[in-house]
Length: 454
Image (cartoon, rainbow, N blue to C red; front, side, top):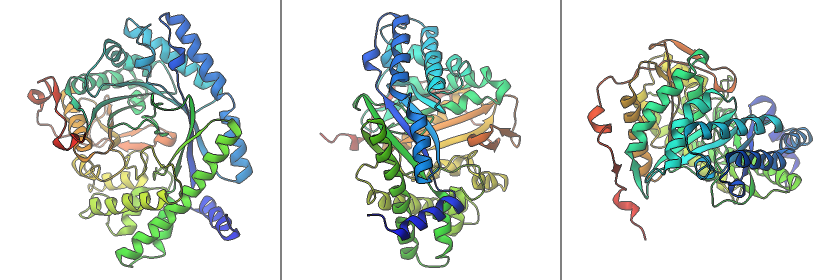
């Protein structure tokens, strides 16, 4: 039972501390849409998405109104398109036609973003996987709401370095094709290691092949709530600090659980998971970096930052799992640069570097996220950065990701403004020494010894 004190407390969190449900994401299986005829395939995909999600936005708005809980985004994730298009697509432009179908379906049902223009290639690439990857720059340049991801590694399989090397070129090509819009195509593309099948957050969401035909996943967010709670225990020891974070995460997750259950009932779609990540926005007071500052570091990136982030991530998960039996997705603390004003301030202060961000990804929810870098960065350097981050995920048995934006025509210190939820970012310097001989070797980095568990 939820008592009156909890209701009052939740209202306070919503009105003054930026608590929101970041997204209701409907996962939709497209496996029953497969056809060897491209026109039939596109028709099947549109109809399946439209018929499944036509009431999603309306239902989300009704829940938000009925319960007074802001639901910021309504999204869709679909089965990885490399699988769905394998039979019909013979060249990259065939996959681009599917991307345009996805874009139209998403706009017609009114969702903010659609994820799943994806390939899973951690051990090798099929012909369809390679064609989809080659199509990504044009697909992202000619659509508005379609998001793409490629999973290139896992703890069980190792890292597919052929795919990593190829993606260095793909990211640069995407940046070039969208250079008139701040290279914004790269905002909609992420490279994963150990990608989860039930992630509601973009750009990496896709609907795993083991999932039900349709599913409702909810992502909650409350950096401002956590920061406000910690202000009340300023100077207390670590035990008090950890207990405060856990209790706050519990309350935040309860809100997500309520919304997820309500959306599931109203739409007649099974409830999947609640992702209890702390996802920041550019809004003042909605920053993970500000939480780290409240814990005791002057800026994100100062000595002690990685330890503070590890503590935060662990306590968020401990509190969240007590509030819902179905916690999944990514769940933890996101540390994107452009979407977090505190992170931007740390970069501008000279405290936060790309190398420190990489160290922080060892203990946080995802990885190198929404980072603008010089547009003249080499493709091999991009591949090396991706490989480093994938290795962190592979060895530590966790999800890691890379979402870099090589801003064409921009140099270190320039500002790239993406607008809205994506925020803005100073262009960060990249290590200029070469890794060409490493990434050009080809083949696979083997799985680590601890992957052998059977």
